[in-house]
Image (cartoon, rainbow, N blue to C red):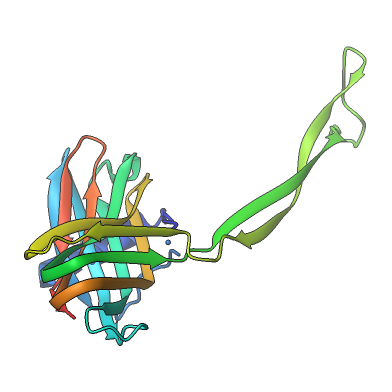
Length: 237
């Protein structure tokens, strides 16, 4: 899952997140005005507030494609956000963003739980040419009798690649009841804001006896090691 970072609208976005907190979380986009805030948590790091949020979380169970009574299958949609508020927020560097799940099961027979997703990646290329440097009167500029040239970048050509599922995460299940934490996507960002659109992340469990429970989380870990996590509601399948 490609994690994309969005920066630059510090004041407006910080005010929105702060207001939501007083009243009460691989595609990047702005949060919708009507987004439902499911869970939110915060810490103070070096005098700045680090806030993580889950929005519009929905996990939908579907019949397992193989039809086995020992299988479970589901899709997850929503958004995860990390926002840094404070005097030095825009200068933050190397913050790690994580998205994943706590998973729990009652019993299993050689069971496992896996997650997969697809994330288009953009590749950009451009042609660079060198053109003569001209003075204010349009005459070529020379230094010691040598013509001066400057680089000129042509139009940027953007293509999409890797549109098939490109990553997975999995955990092996014990026969006895258990709980495991699975980090599904992770990436670093600089600045005061990051948003990840969680779109149709596919999960499947095999060899399970009884229900499977999922608790999604979003986590931010600052460069100095401070971390904050928001755990969502438990979804039972």
